Length: 154
Image 1 (cartoon, rainbow, N blue to C red):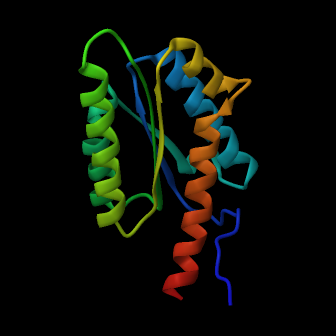
Image 2: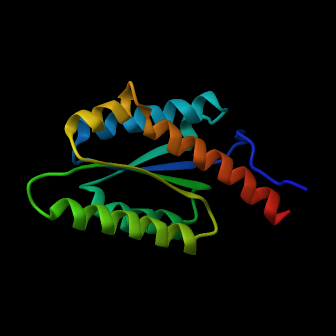
């Protein structure tokens, strides 16, 4: 038997935890994620955006959301672009490690929609131009994992 999640929403609440740093990119990721959720049946009043200063703060906010018990899934969205210093490596590693840790310790889905790119052009491509919208993809992941979690608990 194969058990897998379906792309359906049935009244669940979603939290989009969004980094304000690189807002011109993260706002597009949030728009993509929201559009995906609404097109798959989410109600607008059950999708909230929680804004944080930067990608480094995403894991802490995601943990607060999970611990609050108000939401059925968390979608983390950010954009980290490599620069001329090692800052990129530190922020990207800690954001991804922290979000993964929250996801593994949580009973609800926590999806990763953080761009980690070498250039601004790559980030633009992945936030709604020719490379698609990684916010949309992170929302799809959350929807599928939420449905799968319900099936595995039943």
